[in-house]
Image (cartoon, rainbow, N blue to C red; front, side, top):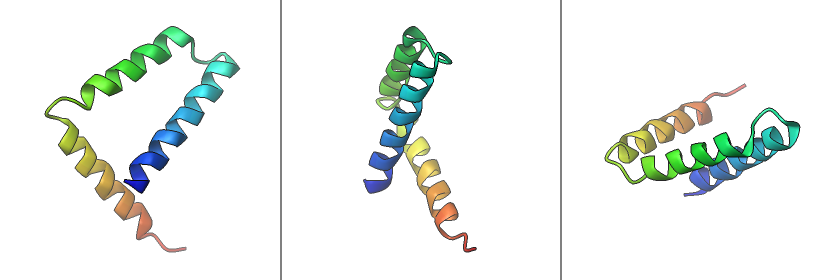
Length: 64
């Protein structure tokens, strides 16, 4: 849950910066938000969630 919330906040900040910088208009941003919302309610959501969790665990195991 903490990772999901962190990713959501990070993506929200990136989207706000892109909108304010003029790289992303409000229309395409709204379409991207709606796409993510509806994608989360499909059967693909668990597979995407597992992939992102495994990616986060892999990144977590990297030591410098």
